[in-house]
Length: 378
Image (cartoon, rainbow, N blue to C red):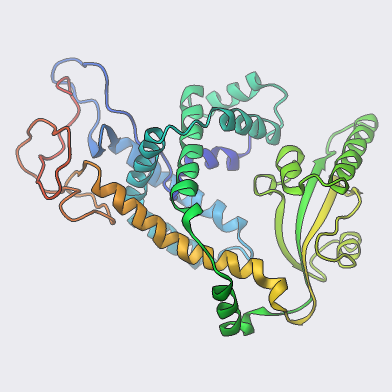
């Protein structure tokens, strides 16, 4: 099974690697220490083992993110990202818990999305049945229930972020024009095409199977020509690494593609699609999302790019503001020795004082007891 897909479910919307565990629901033997608690977020806890596993997963998570960037990160950039994620790890794990709890409070149902996502991952990793996929998950060290829950929580946090923050970020035409006027040097380019793909694998297939795949690729091509959405079809049928992004591959200059592909796409205008072309490993359909002539690009050709940049610039502080609001409405306690880099003054407590029973509601500014180890009194 591909590690990238397991990593997807272990990553939070803010970049944390693992979910916090639920508070224990059953008594243990008297005096037995189950787990040290690092943080409590309302009625949920983050344990030391959660934190340690997340910490250990960070280098691989960052490496995978860097490999997907164009161009890939330099080694020093990768190391800097790991260091930054380590510093903010507890913050990110708390953020995810706040978003999960908010999504449940909002009544967001991701059941349908979960079924589709599980099936997409199954197909992408080449398992014929869900039973085979489940066995592979369990052999990796996760229970099937935990895997489903983690994936469900990831989908839930994404929906909360989009509904509560993303949908409220507005980019005006005047902002786009102003950015273009002030950054024209950034839009002087060689001839480039921005591409998306739908890719169907033929590796290891028989001649009859390859013929069937070619027929499927031609049928998909016809559906696109008849008006169906390319990105939606890519998410459903493509077996390429960019399927979850609607097949979006990014920008290519002349000389960066195989010659047959280059010849096919550089003669197309924005919105054009190629026929289903056979490669050494499968059939590919390419869509030209944008075609940039050499020189300063006109605004209409870079408007989407500028909008995405402005959206990203606004999204990060807007999300942090939203998470701060959730913190102010929540009851969060942090064990001494650990740092929540987004702690709200008077909210997240790091002071060690004698333990007292948990307070059901957070009162802003009130000092709470230190976090006890989980035992039969929990």
